[in-house]
Amino acid sequence: MKIEVLTVDSARTAVLEKQVTATALVDAFYQKIEAEDPAIGAYLTLCKDRAHRQAERVDTLADKGDALPPLAGVPIAIKDVLTTKGVRTTAGSKILDNFIAPYDATAVARLETAGAIVLGKTNCDEFAMGSSNENSGFHPVKNPRDHSRVPGGSSGGSAAVIAAGTAVASLGSDTGGSIRQPGAFCGVVGLKPTYGRVSRYGLIAFASSLDHVGPFGKTVKDVALILQHMAGRDPLDSTSANLPVPNYTEQIGEPVKGLKIGVPKEYFGEGLDPEVRAAVEAGIQELAKAGCEIVSVSLPHTEYAIPTYYLIATAEASSNLARFDGVRYGVRAKEAKTLAEMYRKTRDAGFGTEVKRRIMLGTYALSAGYYDDYYLKAQRVHSLLARDFDEAFTKVDAIVTPTTPTPAFKLGEKTDDPLAMYLADIYTVTANLVGVPGITVPCGKSKEGLPIGLQILGKHFDEATVLRTAHVVEHAIASSATLD
Amino acid sequence: MVSEKDVSYVADLAHLELTAEERARMLKDLNSILGYIERLNQLDTTNVEPMAQVVSRYGVSKDSTGSEAFAYTMRPDELRPSLPHDEAMSNAPQTDGTFFKVPKVIER
Image (cartoon, rainbow over all chains, first blue to last red; front, side, top):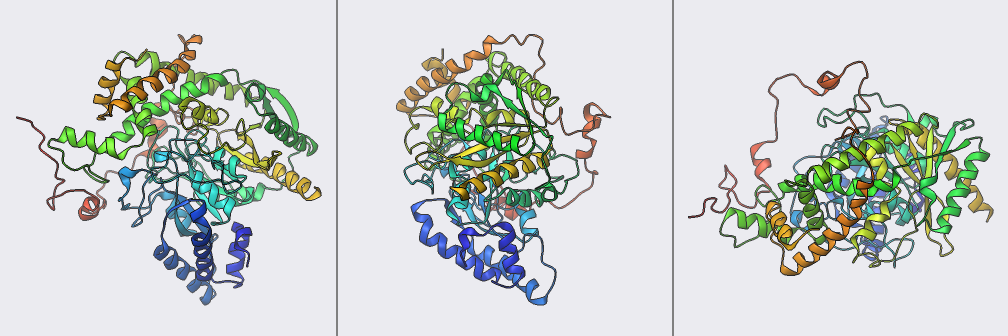
């Protein structure tokens, strides 16, 4: 069996039809991971005992001829910012090098209940802060499509395992583009659901008002299936929405004729790589051919999204990361004589440069005398950004943009310039500020063979339209690739 | 403009020490990022309400307002199990078996 081509559906079917046992499938994935992952660095921790226990449960059900749960035997990987009970959970940080989580994140628990098998935890930028995975406290991840390039970030490991075929699906988190940007760089599908669609319980917080949990997969249908089984109200997350979860896969493949697709001119301006532009415009043409009505829209405050984001996200981060002080968990610096000294030495040794930079920026923005000028100002512009989308969505059903301004950049290319790194998220951050769902779907390759991603943004809680539209692009691109 | 003094003050608030080298780097980076952020002042936001998070704007029933709209987030006031004590302490760098232990809090 060629495990690298397995999808959620085909993996489950293989187990259901007894072409393979869940245990044999898990073993095959571990064999591939041990042979191939060292060159990529996508996994930080493997949880073989846990995976084998879950595989046995699935195999026992299958042997008895019982009905199998919807994701039975599907091997998945989890970004290391989501807690996994009894398994090391680091958030990509040295400060949590030895942390064994005492409970499961809701998203992880729900997928396991649905029969999925957690293979391990994936590498990421420390506390999900970064756009290249080079801020990992452990080691960078290489893009499986080109080892000299970054996989994107912060969920670089979770995107890379899909591209490398070392997991069938994976979970990431997205605070400013951290699922969609690496999805685009690695040529896979990545979905950031609506804020409140998926519980954040057990997600190690970076910026609570902007953090989202979402899936990666090879296909649009795969991410729809994963979303299906983790979405919905969770009493353990007060911001999880009290709304019913529709059947997402049912609508995939439904016609899109008459759907109004907005193309915002602000996302096609200066800084957009010509090859990315051409690929995304070709994708939009495919939607037109499928009967969508293409409408020009304006999101006039787009250029203010990055500055707004970096004030709000860092302000929240400075507060959220105050808990890492060496008292209750994590690594404590030795040889401190007083409590205050222990805090400082622990945090100095445990946090990397980018995390310190963001804590400093956020603390500054919230400090006396600057609060009104920075944090409050950002919150007001936040309103304007939300109004832009409210207005656009009175005219269109979905919005299509490039996911990133360029294809994957080289390792080391932007590490000395934090601002240049932040601008890699220019097309993705607004969806986090406004809370709308967004997906990246591959829409071709550059001349150098690097994947290009097309982003589709939808109305709040309308993942169904986003997925349906993405499927059309996926199908058209796959057909044209076959013709080539 | 952020000064060296600001960097020291903010590092202190954030419980970070930072080496001399890190401080110099921080001074440069914060000024560069805040310089970029300055563009927010091109916008007149005098009459724009601040927005702290999206939940109050989307995803809740439009029939109720204020805290009533979030009534579903409340649970009955009943005792229920929480994380067992030993599990809650299991990751602590230092304990006496009951409490977290830390270095001396009050300096003399």
